[in-house]
Amino acid sequence: NNPNIPSRLITFQSHSTTLRPPTMCRASESAVVPADHERDFMPDIEILTPHHHCPSRRATLLSATFNLVASIVGGGILSVPLAFQKCGLVVSTLLMILAAASSDYSLYILCSCARRTGASSYGEVCRVSYGPGLEVFTTILLFVFLFFVIIAYMVLVQDIWTPIFMLAIQTISGQNSLSDGSDSDNSDGNAVLLGVVLLMSPFLLKRDLHALRFNCYVGFASAAILCFAIARRVSEKYQNGDSEAREIPSVALFPKSFADVLFAFPIITLAFLSQFNILSIQRSLISPCRKRVRLVIDVAVALCFILTYAFGLLGYLYGGEDTRGNILLNFSFDDKVVLLGRVGYGITIMFALPIVTLPCRESLLAIGPQFVAWREGDRKNDTLKDDTLTREYSNSSFGSSEDDEMASLEASRLKQAMAQEVQESNQTEVSPLLVSDVAQISDQPLILSDKQEVPGCESQENVSETIGDHFVHIVSTFLIVSICYVAAVSASGVAVVWSICGSSMAFLIAYILPGMCYIKIRAWRKGHSHRMIISSWIMLVISIVAAIACTTQTVWRMFFVGYGQ
Image (tube, rainbow, N blue to C red; front, side, top):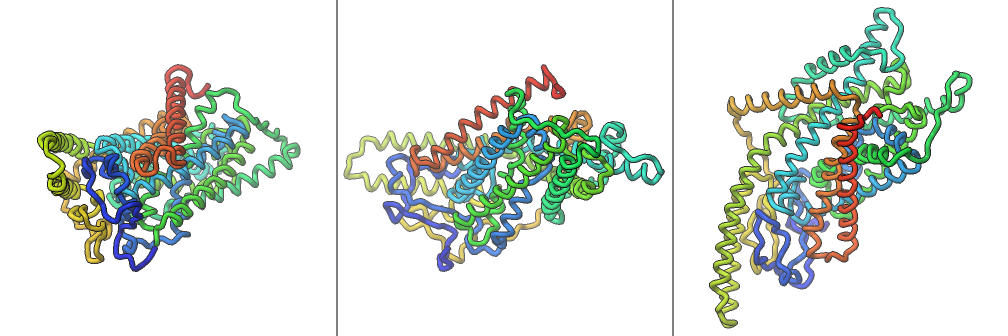
C-alpha cells in the first residue's frame, strides 16, 4: 500500500531478486506455472489490474461491501423458505453455514487467482489456468446458467405482478380481492408476463445498462422490508393463532428423505452465488490490499447469511408444510404489510431481466470467436512446441562450456515468442496476461514505470457498428427472450428452475472452477500440503460429489417422478 511504489505489481521475492523465464511458459497457456527446477527462483508476484493508483478505483470499503451484498441478494432468496421446509431446521442451518463458508472462501481464492495473473474477469482466470479451452467451456456455462436465470426471473415476474394487476382491476371494478394464487388464471399470468416483456423490450435491446446500476440496491432494500413484514406476520400468527382461527404450522427439524436435501441444496447455493461480480468489485476498490479485499468479502457474506437465514427461517415458520417455491405466494395479495416489499421486489426483478439478458447475449455471441481463437491458438502452440523440442534435442550434445550461451539464446527466443503471443492476445483481451512489456521478463527486476500505460485505465474507443451487427444483436435478443418466455409459462414454479440450474451449474461456477484454478495457479508455490491448497481440494471434491448427486436427483425428478411429488 506504499503510494511511492510506481508499479501495478506488488512483488514478494523469496530467494532471488530477478525473474528468470520459465522453460515452457507462454501467455496462451498456464504462464503462471514454471518448471519444477525454477520454482525457487521465481518471485511471488501480485498483478493489480488496473494499477494501484488508477483513477477508476473509487469504491470505499463501505460501498464495495454493500455492492457485493446487493449483488448476492437476488430473486433466489424468495425460494430459501422452501429449502427450509424440505430439509428441516437443523439440516437447513448446517447447509446454510456450509454454503456461506464455501462461498466466502471461493470468492477470496478467485480474487487471489486474479491478483496472481492479472486477469480481469472470471473467464480470463480460467483461460490463464488451463488455456482457452476452459474459457470456451466457461462462456458456454455462463450462457446456459444466465439463460435459466432469465427463465426464473420471468416466472417471478409472473407470480408477483399478476395478482397485483388483478387486484387493481378488481378493486377498480368493485369486486372482491384475491386471497391466494389459485384465483388467478394462467392465461392472465401469461398475458401479464408478455406485457412486462414488451414494456422492458427497449432495455432488453440496450448494450449499456449503466442507468440501472442502482437496481440491486432496490432489491436489497425490498428483501429487508419483506423480511420485517414476514417477521411481523409470523409474530401475529403465533401469538393470535387461536383467535384468528388459524392453526400454527408444524415445524420439522430434519428432512423426510435424502432426496429433499438434494433438491434444496442447490437453492441454498444459489442464494450466495456472486462469483461473477467479485472481480469487478476488486478492480474498483481503493487500496486493494489482500486484507481489505478479505474484509469486504467476509462482511458481505456475513450480512447476506444473516438476511438470507432470517428470510428462510421466518418464511418457513409462516408457511410450514405449505411453504411454496415463491414465499410471496403464501401471503394474501391484499396484505398491505407485505405489499410494499412485493411491489419493490417486482420492480427489482422486472429491471433485472435486461441486466441478466445483456451478459447472456454477450456470452452467446462470444462462443464462436473464442472457439475459433482456441483452435488457432492450438495450432500455433503445436508449432512452438515442435520448435522447442527440436532445439532441445539438437542441443543435447553440447558440453557444459556452452551452457551459458545456450541458456541466453533460449531465454531470448522464449521472450520473443511470449511477447508475440501476448501482443496477439491483446487484440481481443482487456489486459495482457502478465505485463504490457514482456521484454522485461529477463534478468532485470519486474517493475513498470509510472508513464507506462496500464490496461484497464485507458479510455475505450468507440467502434462503429454495421447493419449486420445490429441484425445479429436484435435476432439474438429476440431468440433468447422468446425461448425463455415459452419456458417460463410452461414451468410449474420458480423452485423447479432454481433446482435445475443450481444442481450442476451453480456448483461449477461457485466452487469447482475457482478451486481448480486456485490449485493450478498456487499449488506450485505453496505446495499441496499448505492449508489453502488442502481447503481448495476439500471444497473441490465435496462440490463435485454434490453436483453429481444433485444433478442425478434433478434428472430423476424431471423424467421419472415429477416435481410435484
